[in-house]
Amino acid sequence: MGKLIVETCEIEGLKVITPEVREDARGYFMETYQYNDFKAAGIPEVFVQDNQSASRRGVIRGLHFQIEHPQDKLVRVIKGEVFDVAVDLRKGSKTFGKWFGVRLSEQNKKQFFVPKNFAHGFLVLSDYAEFCYKCTDFYHPGDEGGLAYNDPDIGVEWPITEDMELIFSDRDTKWKGIREYKKEHGIED
Image (tube, rainbow, N blue to C red):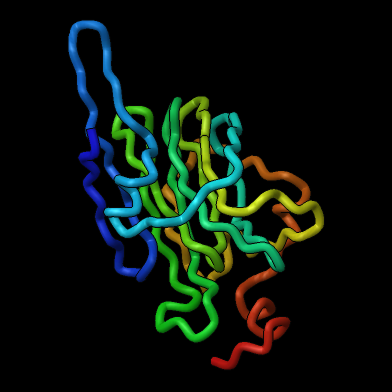
């Protein structure tokens, strides 16, 4: 098949990918990943682990990153809809601390490529969502970091509605903001 539409984002390195979808009376078929096509589209990374999660409406997972073993991620939604966010944590980047968000859903079938050294998270917008992602490094327990989802210095514009009850893990309620991250990592303003 090999037909991907790859959109670059205002933050260098982030990419939104729309695969070719072939539909007929039976349903649809699409390649969600094919190394040669992704390499030709500027994503030559090799993925070593696939993960999947299920969450209900109002769940916020993130904003997570790996400290010593950073991972590139290729994320997508196979059921429902999420608002997916990446925050640039690359030292020396002109967009350090900036965020980008995209809606991923079973309907639009878009994927989001998030390079190493970005914090990543999502908010579930549908009643239920299944989220899948590929990683370029294995999971290392104890190597996790995070940022507060509502840090005003980052300013993510989450599409939270008044009737939405937000749900977090205990861990995700304890992350600090980007100012603390910069102090801990010796990053100057």
